[in-house]
Length: 433
Image (cartoon, rainbow, N blue to C red; front, side, top):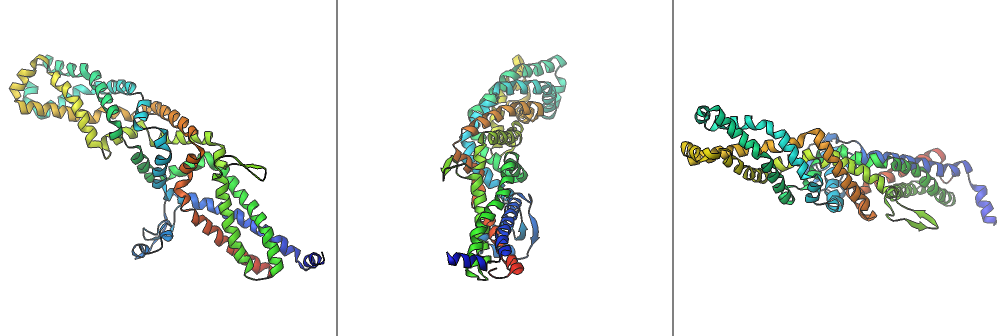
């Protein structure tokens, strides 16, 4: 044991003890600043460099992944908001597609209630709609018709409205899988609102994220003990900076592992370990469902997507086709006489014009905030239930996959800070204590 006594006698104990303290503080700062890198800033902050965009195209792929590089800028955007669209895509592929089909979402909204609401909102607009179209398409005929006849036309359209609207909502339900694409809805909304993706993480995971920062100190301190021993034995100037790189890298890697792994509870050395996010999957499911139902897959956004999305033309054509029979029947016994008076082509134009004008107004009630909020609760319940039922591995994929390939930036950041910490310790205490 003489070598141990000799080694202990040669140690500068203040410098020796300071190494774990240094690595602990650096570990804390690594995880604290790493969280900032994950979520902030929401928008890209930096400067545009002339020619950078062209140079970026030939840089290594990992460098191209740094936010702003491919756009020709040098700066930073939080990894999560920078990958918002990608997270939306993965969230759909890994989770929302398993949570329910477009048809299930639509049925959850209770089409019968939607039809009743449309009728209630749309009925008062019928007189103005018919009057506007007739004045535009055939003003003389409309002016010459006796008031009772004009009123009768309007009343016939209003009388048919419940049946027509029910047919419309039924047609939407039948073709909803072709008309509605939740993946495009989610990707588009996440891309336009990257702060929403940050909110998903923070609203249910802030406690775990804060814990990760403090674990940075614990991991750094524990990893610093063998570093202090190695430094005191070999007395090499390069050791602390090199080992600082290892400690910094491992501190961030362990922090990420702590949050997401293992997906299922396991015992390691007799200690039960389970990913921090996974321990509260049920609470996370409620928060996630609330955000998706209130901000992403809402009745208002469904209505907008149906009419103005990439498949809007098909929706409008389908709605117009469902509405035309009501216009045919509106003239009642006078239909034949009116058709002769204005001509078959003109009559068809009037009928089609009324149908086309009615299309946009048919789904306007989707924008009613009170009604939309009531329907959102039904979507929230569906998504929460299905998210709770997700296997833990799928839940991890939903929350982590979008940023997993960018985690190297966090680890590299940790390594750089560890390197800086090693040089700082050398500057203060010298080589080998």
